[in-house]
Image (cartoon, rainbow, N blue to C red; front, side):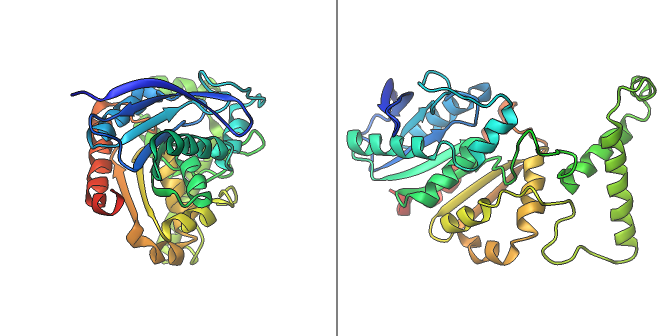
Length: 316
């Protein structure tokens, strides 16, 4: 028997009606449910219908799965007042949709008796899941795909806070273009990003000099400037990971992977290792942020499912 998919609505704490889709397995729902959270300005479907595939896989594992549009997104009521997308994302990164998530949990508990939850999401959905887990102990596990650790905003200079790993990849990309006539045409016709070129070369020279002189980064300092690290991230990450499971999946070609390594990991190694037993990290080589290709999606789903199976006895 196939799983049942039906549209649902519930009201958030502001009295606004939110729309979602509930995936129910053939067997009666267990007391643990999964909620897949909006990646940001994208709806409950997500890029390349990723959330539909996640819901199908989780439902096959016996979980009741809800994916919904938060306030102002997709079919749900509400408005987004921010003009710049970066400013909107900045509000998501500090917990814009936590209350909507808790309302979704309340609805599932009332309608289906769901007492514990696994929260999952891509990018903005990942950080929302972490915020919600820090607020509510009903969250049993967090699955974050491309977890952002820095703050966006129209007033944030992306060149200033770019990570060392991303600069190295950019430099390699420029080197590959040296034999292309079109690249030189762009360069001499003033169409290239000269600031980015100079910054990537400058980082390479400084990093090479440090290695030549045997000077590593000072303890607790990342290679790139880390001033735009989300000040809330370490607190909520440690709070959740101290008692519950956190699974992080990063794409190898995504800047968010380097930002996690440089802006968080290099500054909070003791705290990270204190909770390491509760943290799973997997890198999908060469994948982009939204996992565009089927093989990347399959690798993510396989890894997430295997971790969930390994802790199933504790969760279910």
